Length: 162
Image 1 (spheres, one colour):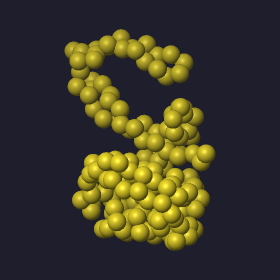
Image 2: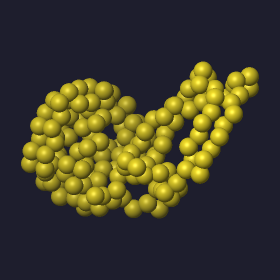
Image 3: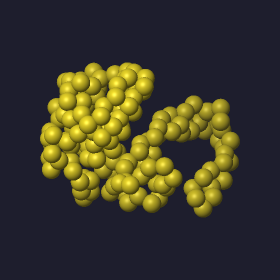
Image 4: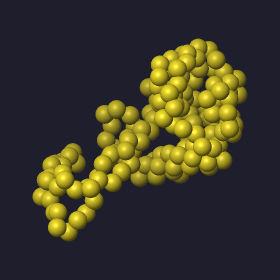
């Protein structure tokens, strides 16, 4: 199985001087603390799929994943794409380029090292969020996506991390 980056939004405590907590950390980085009534802020966490730990990922890879995700969000916002939109569709042996034209018609897509005629083996979405469809399209087509403000680049190999 190829590694992939999963970005999860977690809730993080917002510091208030009068609402301090006692925090206990274990070797795995898991914490127990008070302060559950405090306001929460979103956080971004990087992992290489289910069961991986952030500490297993080099900082350069974490930065690359966050930059790509920021490019993804900026691109979707720029083109007013509603990522919560429900998608019901079945794609079997359909060209990836055609799927992008269908679900993201305003977004530029270029192929760099990947065959522009690459097809999706099979992806079925039943009232799935558009964001989930986009997240799994690369697996279904056996390619990698790189997102930037300019568009989506489809690659045959994982992007090189500096």
